[in-house]
Image (cartoon, rainbow, N blue to C red; front, side):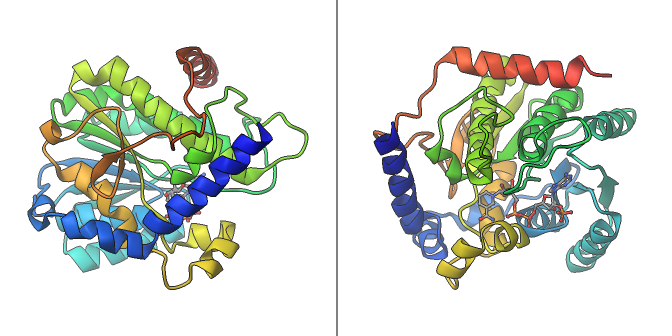
Length: 322
Ligand SMILES: NC(=O)c1ccc[n+]([C@@H]2O[C@H](COP(=O)([O-])OP(=O)(O)OC[C@H]3O[C@@H](n4cnc5c(N)ncnc54)[C@H](OP(=O)(O)O)[C@@H]3O)[C@@H](O)[C@H]2O)c1
């Protein structure tokens, strides 16, 4: 077990260094087709969580520049307003809106989704981007470990609670969840709140990101017949405020070779723009292509029973609490 964990980490480090960096993006970009991104989104309603910063900001800007109506979900009003105003100015698109919601709170998510849903606007694209890597054990007002609350519970709740609006946008609706290649280092576990005595935020983050990929697979199985596509993706290693704060070592080691936020957002936008026939619901994407969910010999494949246990827990957290 110890050896296998060491192998996974080493394989991830090497694989990441070759592919997740800026030079990895530039290599992969040689096969990109410019026309894939020349698609207009006028009339499409798109929601991006964590849109005031980093990859979420670049995603919101990319959607706005293609004419979409964009709802930026942010927790901080001042930061949200500053990002909103910048995006409106840069893109000239007046149909960009700010929605305030702290995604670490299940009650805020419920009141936001209920308020937004009352307008009965179809939702064409939901980008579950907001995320964090907190190294200390922090517990939210709901009694949840903070990484788990934002990375997993919020992703689950936003997707489930917006299903009716997504169905209204069928057959074009899609949910894009921003996971991470970090998930290659962890298998799926229903130890959702990290019960081990010594907290390891990096491991918890990677477990959360593994759950996002497995949830996407499960949603595809449960709901693709509703005309909604579900995709998870890895943005690569990008220079964002989140990385600078949570992974200063990586930032330093890869200085000059981290992706830009636009490169990090590239595959999110590509997934939002492509005709759905080109995409596979439930798949994991990296640099505009479907990619593996497991590195070779890493022993991260799971049984359906683990996912069922996780789903049951998440359902209880969202639908049994008032
Ligand atoms: N950058 C990378 O190399 C990389 C690699 C793999 C995966 N990712 C994933 O990419 C996504 C974006 O990360 P990033 O690197 O762009 O980081 P970032 O710059 O820190 O952006 C994260 C966004 O999430 C928001 N957020 C965090 N907690 C929230 C909460 N409780 N409620 C509402 N919003 C919240 C942040 O808001 P505040 O500004 O208010 O904190 C911010 O807008 C994350 O899911 C991350 O796991 C990034």
